[in-house]
Image (cartoon, rainbow, N blue to C red):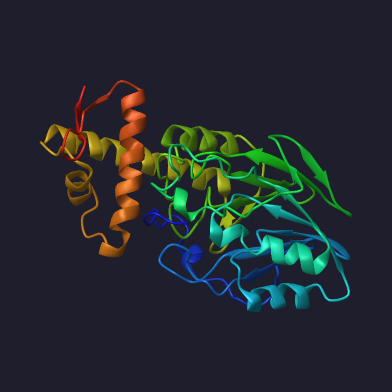
Length: 302
């Protein structure tokens, strides 16, 4: 799920990938689900890993046409495992139907554990019916037929987010953590900007040569790109602090000053990411939040 555009470090990444089955590497094929939106680009990327006995990464939304496309793509093969990066509905809700159709195991992210009542931020976007057969912890490896995948805990976009490293090809299925077409929204209370920045540092320190994200085309030169994302977030943080110093106090005030020219349809996502920055700054002692009383919470420089 996207927030706002990244700097055009790799303009080709803004080209929508083809929806049809596409061979990406000796071990990876991709289908794109028909759920295009401002937040999903031209749809959720579903990856088929391996040959013969395969794993499916992020089957996507509960769409019968996409289910049929996945099953057709692996005709004559066996889906052994369904891997889930995180439980936002555009990534995981087809898992139960695919498990029934293929007799596969669902493995990966933990089920969603709401903070509070689970209705604020993007918490309502989580798949509450997700029921994995096994959960992968950070560093745990899954051995498929002719390939090995390592789980990489990458909380931030949401608390249960995992990336999957395909060790045989030095590739990373980065889910919504790192995408080349847009930034990822970080929405409290489930999303955490502090966790997100730490997860960026974590994947940047790894040696993958390419990322296959949850939406859009590949992330090439990933270490360079992740560095650019982190710099972009720090610039956004500096802009928020400057706006606070200039008299802005509420999230809507800050969005109006920081996200100049923003598409109104993205205002809520921008507000959630702004709130994530504010919460991170408050935890680091740079911002104070005054009790909301009867109105909105007001923020000021510490």
